[in-house]
Length: 142
Image (tube, rainbow, N blue to C red; front, side, top):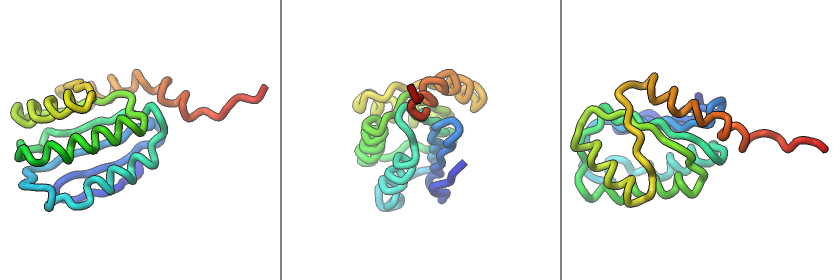
């Protein structure tokens, strides 16, 4: 696992063996100034990921964010889509936060796959490993 960042607002990491990005959103973000490097950190993790990567978003500690932060989340979702995001799984515990991110996802064409625990989410995403790993395979010699 390659850790990109771990701070009091979010954690971001990449597992090259699964071609999977892990994001954990923590607490309440009053505005974008509390997460000034969020987009840059996403750029870093997306540079590591291969096409057809998956994302596991742990949002169990996330508190609903002010509406102004929707653009920040939408931007990173769009960046992810452009970089080759194949599928995602989300863990929620707050219904309002869940609703907020579902709305953002709908507006950026990122589907929400909700799970109650990490094991179920990992198992779901693991079903995409073959497709994900095909994109990283070396071209076969003829």
